[in-house]
Length: 405
Image 1: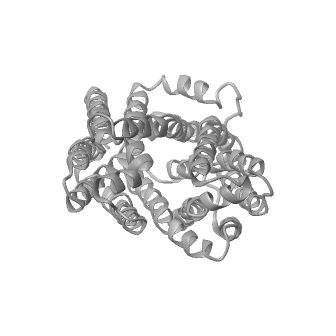
Image 2: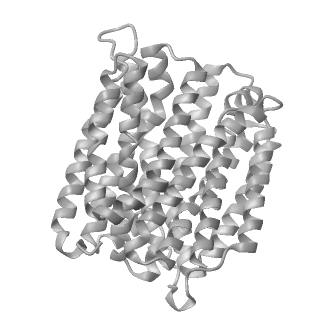
Image 3: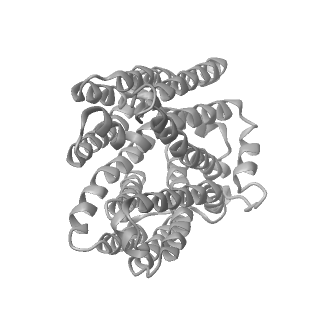
C-alpha cells in the first residue's frame, strides 16, 4: 500500500507542478489581449499575479495542512486538486484581467496542497526512510516544472487559452486517478481538532517553537529559498545581459536544471541519506550552494555559467534530508501543520525575493555605474553562507539526539 500510495502522490505532485508550468508561456500574450497594453505593462501585471499567488500560498498552506490533520489527507488532497482544475477552467474563459486575479487567488489556496502531500510521507513511512520519499516527491515536482512549460509552449501556439484547458483536464485526471488508487494514510485515532488560531502562518510558527531543531531548519530554509529566488527572478535577464542568450537557450538551460534536480532530489538524495545520514547529507550538500552562486556571479562564458548551475543542483539533496530530520520532531497529529509551516516559509520568500533580486539586477545592469549582471548571485551566495551556518549550528546542537537518523 505504501509503495502504491507513494507513486500516486508523486503523480499528483507532478500534475500540480505541470499544471502551473503549462500556463507560464502564454501568460504574457493572454494578459496583453485582456488589457490591450504592451509587453512592458503586461510584465507588471504578471508580477502582481505572481505576488497574489504567492501571498495566498503563504496564508493558506497552514490552513490546508491543518485541515488534513483534522479530516485526513485523502479528501483534502483530492479536493484541492479537483477545485484547482475547476479554477483553471474558469481562467480559460476569463473575459477580463480581474478574472485572472480571482483565478490566481483560488490557485494559490488550492496549490497549498503540497502540505497535505508531504504529510502522507510522515504518516506511512518510517522516520529513517522518509528522506528518500520526500526526495521522490521533490523530483516529481521538478519533472513537472520541466515538462509543464515545454508542453504549454507547444499547445500555446494554437491559442493562449488552450494551456489552461489542458491544465484543467490534467488536474481532473489526477483527482480521478487519486480517488481510484489513493488510500488514506492518517488513521482517525491520530487526527486532531482544527484550530484556526493554530492554522495560520503566525500560529503555526508558534507551535513549531516547541522544537528548536524545526525552528533552525525553517530559518535555514527561508535563507536558502530566498537565495534561490535570484535564479527564479533574473535568470533570463542575466543570460541575455551577460551572454546574449536567446529565449531558446534560456529555455534549454532551465530544462537542464530541472532534469538535474529530478536526478538529485528524486534519486541521489535517498541514496546519500541512507549512506551518510540525514545530518551530513543536509550540511554538506547545502555547502555546495555558495560556490555555485559565486560561479554564476563571475562566469565569463555560458559554459562556466552552466557549470555553476550543475554545482547548484547538489543542494537539492538538502531539503529531503531536512524534512527527514524535522518530521519526527512534531507529533503524529501535527504533520500537516509542519508541512504547512514549510510551505508558508517558501511562499514568503516568493513574495520578498522577486522585487529584491530584480532590484539588485536593475541597479547593476543599466548604463549607469558598474555593469555587473551577476550581482544578485553575490547576494544569494551571502544568504547561503548564512543558511549553511544556521543549519550547521542547529544540527550540531542536536547531533546526539539525531544520530539515529
